[in-house]
Amino acid sequence: MDAQGSPTPAHAGAAAAPTARLGYDESTRGAEPDLIELDIERLAYGGDAIGHLADGRTVFVNGGCPGDRVAAEVVEDRGRFLRARTREVLVPSPARVVPPCPYFGACGGCSWQHVAADTQLEAKRDTVAGALSRIGHLPDAESLVGPARACGPAYGYRNKIELVATAGVRGLELGFHRAGSEDVIPVQGCALLPARVKTSPKALTGALRYLAGSGDLALRRVSVRVGASTKDIEVALWTDPGPFPRSAAAKVISQALPLTSLVRVLVKGAPRERRVSRVEVLAGKGFWRERLAGLPYLVSAPSFFQVNTGGAEVLVELVLDALAPDGTDRVLDLYAGAGTFTLPLAKVAGEVVAVEAAGSAVRDLRRNLEDEGLWADVVGGDAAREITSLGAFDLAVVDPPRSGIDVAVIDALATARVRTLAYVSCDPATLARDAARLAEAGFTLTGATPIDLFPQTYHVEAVARFARI
Image (cartoon, rainbow, N blue to C red; front, side):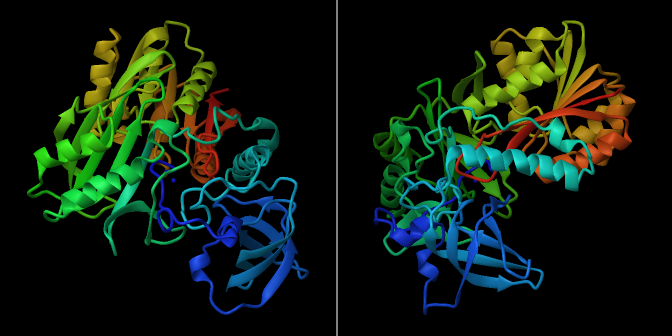
């Protein structure tokens, strides 16, 4: 899940076979393979669990839970380590729970639904500390990383999912990618969505299948956004440019869901590039509203916004605590998005400069500041290029993509004489790599807090505080 969209499940509406709930895809089953027995020791970043053979080799086991003894099928032998999938749980762990989702084990979105929440939290904390130790070479990482924070319900927490559109035997299907595959599993619902839109995939599949009967929609994917603190529901249809039944789509989809906004996002190029050429408003307001830490946000379909509203409020709290602006500080917000941190910082800092590359997010950010009567200097452009011309700063927050921050940005932060940096990370490995680079530039890690922004998955967010000491 992007950790930012969601993947896709198996046969829509079909009851899951018991084996699918063990964490592997039943569709791969053929002749009975040779099995190995082993004890599951811990969870691994990436979704698998870890055990060891008698000869000491590590086995990454799909569908394992710490404390289990399992019979597993080896699917790959890499010499120094093996990959396997659980075939039978011989002795279940006390931490093993029953997954509530019928698509679990096939859908690539949730890999830990069979693991108790406290065990997931422990694993995520260990992931962050381990990465800082091994990759960042920080000898005191264990003492610097605090417990992982939960931030709301374990299910129904997502304000957004992205469904892949594909051609099925019954016509157009919407679903998520199969684990480790580009195959799409059609779904009728998602347990990570709030109850009022939990079955929106089913409703949208029916509406879009009806529309597709009149011609090719050139549909790539469909996103659903739902406000956790508003009544807003937005559906975005991501399509190739070309003819499209706009009026019919507005009528049929609005009947399928109680929408406040329906937009068509026209994209070019490869699917992963997400090159947006324009956005057409088909019905409603043309944007989605949410409240975060008491502040209102308007967000357009192409713009990034954290998919867990409660978790995003924890991020804001931790960033403000880490920076502790006193009302006179000049603060830099890099990778600002629609203003998750810009708006709350603008209320308490002396001056805020926000840098964001995506045009849609820049427009959203400026509008959100204006609507709330707040001021910040919003700079549209690449962080590494823009930061060198912005002068000195007292404080900075960076919320980069999964790839982390460029070396040029780290050098510029040092040149800008930033004394305290809050680093919001969605990838422990790149956080650890950047922590080592920041140390070389004179920044010392003083603490890090993992946040469980994505329960039921291995993904973990973290807020790390760096200071020039």
